[in-house]
Amino acid sequence: MSKTKGGLGKGLGSLFGEIEVAPDGTVLSGEPPRTLPMTRIEPNQDQPRKVFDPEAMQELTESIRMHGLITPITVRKRENGLYQIIAGERRWRAARSAGLTEIPAHIIEATDQQVMELAMVENLQRQDLNPIEEAEGFENLMKSCGLTQEEAAERVGRSRPAVANSLRLLSLSQPLREMVAEGRLSSGHARALLSIKEEDRRLEAAERMQRMTVRQAESLAKRMNKKPKEEPAASEDFSVDYIAEIERTLEGSLGRKVTITQGKSAGSVALEFYGADDLERLIQALKGLLV
Image: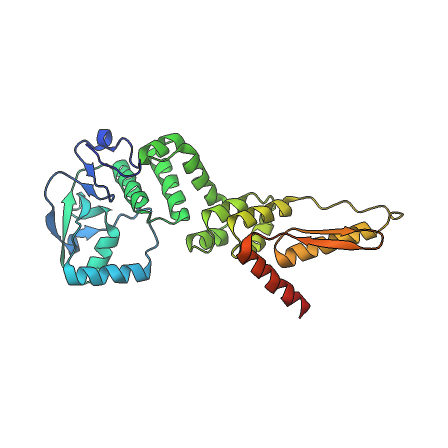
């Protein structure tokens, strides 16, 4: 029977028979691990994870150098005699860097589709994928195996809306995808960007959103989607348009909603802020305008 964590990998038991998925996402075979030469092991080119944090890799390398590899990797044997990694590429890379010439591995039989599903489950359980890698993994799983969003979600134990929201990130331009993959923008910020109708304004918005909370980013996206007010007739009082222009200018400089109210002899300016930290940023921004 399969043992999974957090609902991931629903139905793996029926898909893989006696293959077991441990609580940490490691795929087991029911048989004791074998020791394989490092030269006979190859990575999976369709592995959803593409980015390996250098600092974390160095820490794992040092741990393996001191204590050896405690958790075996999982592989399948290919027709060329090599063993392809199904789960544990990060451990394999670190073991290679630590100078190991052989490594313990569970050997299982699995189809290409099963390999992709197991790789996705392991990475999702370990939370190793950045939002873009996760989206690309879902897309690759669907295309290669002919799955619908609902079927892909079922395979990895995610809800269909979660998979759909993940796939939406792939409609971002390459520069924005890189910002999300590098962690400069969260998936919440990315969804706010996708709500901006004019694609050519998204990069401008992304630069500003890096200093905002997700809530602030959503508010910015809403303001950017507002249609500009129509120009008044020549006979109308231009003071209304002048005030609106000042509001837009201040909103662009301060990254928040600005409301100017003008009376006959006096007026007021209202600035939104979101919590104590944001208030401090607002004060500093106002000081900068006065320099």
